[in-house]
Length: 210
Image 1 (cartoon, helix red, strand yellow):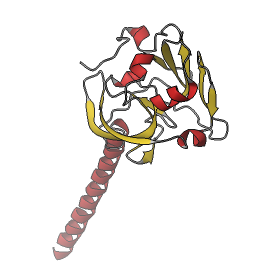
Image 2 (tube, one colour; image 1 turned 180 degrees about the horizontal axis):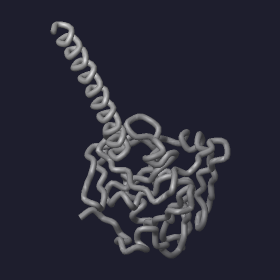
Image 3 (cartoon, rainbow, N blue to C red; image 1 turned 45 degrees about the horizontal axis):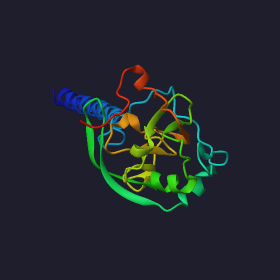
């Protein structure tokens, strides 16, 4: 009888340990899924149209600013980071209705780039191009000149992750997130406004936060 009780106790312990292991595994998987969906527990939901994150080669990569400008530039990633940098704290809003408050971004002011290239008088808009070729969006020069328009290379004092647009993403706090292209590599100054990816699908061209 005592032997049967000991065996039952051992089985109960083994079953309990098995349940604990299974529960721990489920919690870990759930945590990884949540981490992916929320962009690293920062409250972000990762929305992307790309089949995968575009490949970034720091050797061949160039940040290009061209079109209707007096002084086109083509900078390596390190050369861009060597430009005068700033930090800012701003809220991020998605048109889907969610947002993240007080996001800490680091990067280069878009105004710094405008001053460097000197847009021509006929330039009225900027088209933002992503590395993958899938995504474009645009702003008027007046919108692009807002003081908190930022070409971000870092978030929370760390380089952007692939989910968040590494190597660069554009941040426009007064507009919804779809106005900020991720995987940014080119700014093209043009006379007429190009209609971006989501605007072609019915979203507002001027994505001001309501």
